[in-house]
Amino acid sequence: MDRSTPPAAPAPDSDPDPRSGQGAGGPVGLDLGRPFTTAAFLAAGHSAVELRRRCYRQVLRSVWVHTEAVDDDTPIRAALALHPASAYASHFSAARLWGLPVPEHPFEHVTVVKACHRRPRPGLKTHVTGRGRAVMTARGVRATPPVVTFIQLAGSLALVDLVVLGDALVARRGVTAAQLRAACDRSTEYYAAAAREAAAYVRDGVDSPQETRTRLLIVLAGLPEPTVNVVLRHDDGSWWRRFDLCYELVRLVIEYDGRQHADDARQWQSDLVRREELDDAGYRILVVTASGLFAEPGRTLERIRRQLVERGWPDVPPLDETWKRHFPT
Image 1 (cartoon, helix red, strand yellow):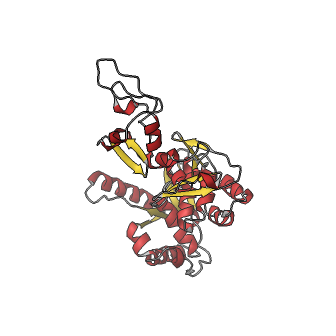
Image 2 (cartoon, one colour):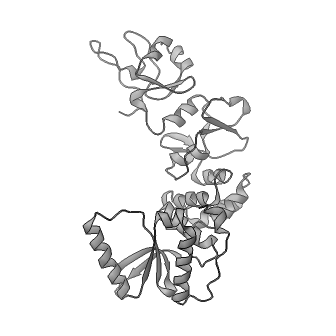
Image 3 (cartoon, helix red, strand yellow):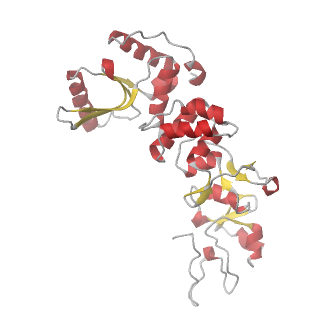
């Protein structure tokens, strides 16, 4: 059901749909398919007793929703239902609305333009700004634009998580890495400096958060940065293979593999054929797994550095221990 408009009124002889806001011969005018406040419920002519029905769920203090209307966006819609129409989703909440990867966070984030518009609640973080700021609509909800969200979260996210967010923003929201860096350079937001630092590591064409983390592990250890999204072609120009991370000069491929193929015979056979083709072409594939990224990052770096040296990369530096601040084991 499209919950953006109230359901049609039931026929006289049928039972009313409780989400329509109409009781039996009772009040109308409140869309119960969206989060609503207790005050709005009562003002529409309903009684407090009705909220005790199992068909209603309390999302925040004094904010309710019909159980059939609950979805992933219900918490932020409920938070905004408390605030004036000028309020909008921001920070972690805006990132989720835009489909961008951020760590789990216990609060919904709303920005208002006046301090008196705050509505303190457990599980709700309200920000106040007097800045004139563009607001967009994400999944039907007013929210900060993706680039503004990136800059806001520079005050909350660690460097690696912020670059993960930036890579995903570039891949999914039609912004290039250069445009993101330029926006951060122009920004006068409080955390613009931290955003600029992270944006310098953002690249076009990144496919996954773990690919970002693998690349940052390498770079923060002082090793040469592999090229992102390398495509190999046949002599006639047709596509042959694509690598997430590659040192083209020495034909070394770094590949994060979070898949589980042990029981997949077809995938196993496909991987063998692919490996043989690349071996024939002189490429070495170094596979990084979740364990190699999160449990043994130091060993992963040693493997990569050794391959760079053995395959003739010029002047491979020793490992810089900066990576340890960002990849604790």
